[in-house]
Length: 177
Image (cartoon, rainbow, N blue to C red; front, side, top):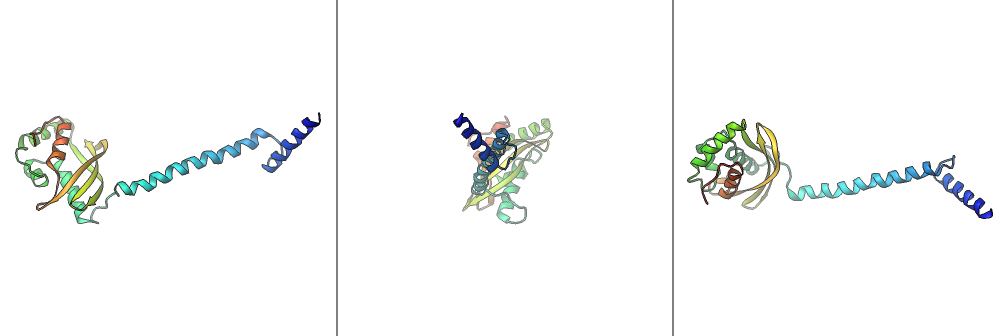
């Protein structure tokens, strides 16, 4: 009996320390669990925020002429409404890609337009990593695709392998490099 009284007294003290005057241990326990749950997302969010700049920062049009040139190259090269003459200056070694571009134009019509929206660019010397979304009828369908651009004597261009990779994904083929 004496132990029972001690247990009840201990529970009453714990309840009072938690700010619950009713001594309801269920109510006292619930607030203690909430901060633990709240703290977990804070810990999870911090590394994500820290890692984003390491990958690539989103670009701001007009802020950096190199970034603007890369975005322009990707936009024109992967726009299903631009013809070979428009695409060629933006592709490293575009020779022999005329039929590929013609087929891509036809495929683009079936999807009411294919294009890309560049979401970030990270330049390192003469190379850039480009993250972009593939758009069908101006709607993002394949997000966070990664491509590259290289600085050549002609300016920022898309390597033929990158261009052909997307053309093969569009099922229009591409002559071997």
